[in-house]
Image 1 (tube, rainbow over the protein chains, first blue to last red):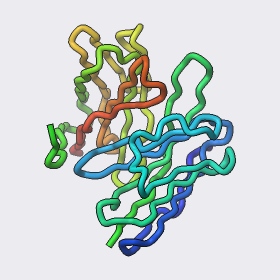
Image 2: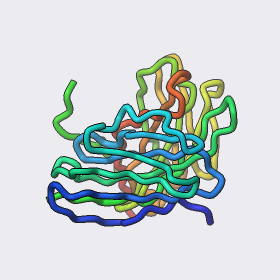
Image 3: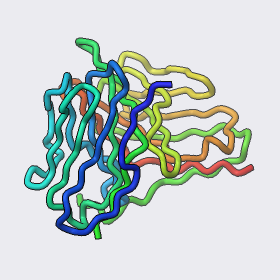
Length: 116
Length: 113
């Protein structure tokens, strides 16, 4: 049963520390998305990649957030330095986009981040 | 306007009843719509999708209806079960927005046994 995996599932850290979240997309999927979910803002797209290249990171605070895909099986989202307002659930999703059509996004279980 | 916190619409139904969850969207250029279900502590789970060239699509116990004239989307769940209790999100994608989905605020469905 193919699924998106995320690690860690929970993270508690102190303000100013670096946080790295990892995602393994479904094998064969060529598009990877990072979302943040909070009670205040709901589900927001931070960035997404296709074939490992960043296509849209307009939703991501550039000064402290960075997203990369070192290879096709790993996506990372880093926050440095972390702040209490970054506390949220971070979801990774993946999809397969054939040319000319949109893809269905399949979500991972999320990383619950608490910054003290 | 600025949100002061999301107040989820709620829907409470009895087990076995049919449920209808509604969603209004604003982008008349949206060409693809999806419904997701999110249970507590889990990620959103794909339920069903529909493209703008259709007005109805059926799945297992679920039906999505699209009314482009009034920019309205609905999800119908037949014979609702306690396991259907969750937050349901609609999402839309515009023709020119690439793969970017815009999610609605969600509706909390509670199924009473």
